Image (cartoon, rainbow, N blue to C red; front, side, top):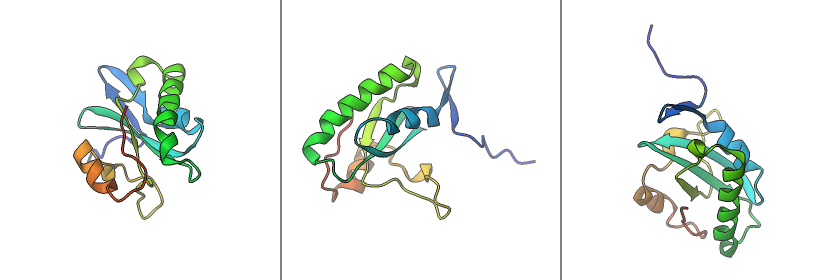
Length: 124
């Protein structure tokens, strides 16, 4: 047998089991969020948000603060992402699932991928 990892999106961070889907579900109920996904890469828990098309660039910083506060209310402290990053769209596999391997790992890569995006690139 070859071990290929977990079938779900559960990771262990500092001894705590974290369901990445719980983070995304909480974010998806926040105002202005079209879609989101959480990922644990390079030992950093990040959340990636795609905003609804009617959200203006001037509103994103405020809405990120609202989303951060919602996460603080919904989730235990150990499940809070260290960064909230804005993406123009979530990368998808050919099957239509989120391609977590294609999510940016570092701020520099994130800026390179989104530098032509009209929305600001921010993290909390």
